[in-house]
Image (cartoon, helix red, strand yellow):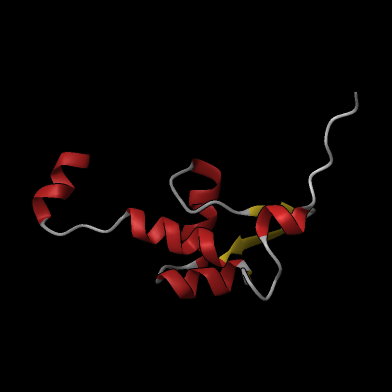
Length: 82
């Protein structure tokens, strides 16, 4: 039995429903530099991204989830995670 083919539109949504951002747009959206995003992409720790050939694309929903995962309510939470 051949592996099931994944329809990318089903997996990540349509461009209108889940906008894609290039690295510069994603960096502006989350408030960092494109260089920081590039560093995170190579070392880990940043938001998930798609690589399509040489092009890097960030999904709006992934950026929102990633930012929400870094939300803190007091500085004590920061020292607990380090």
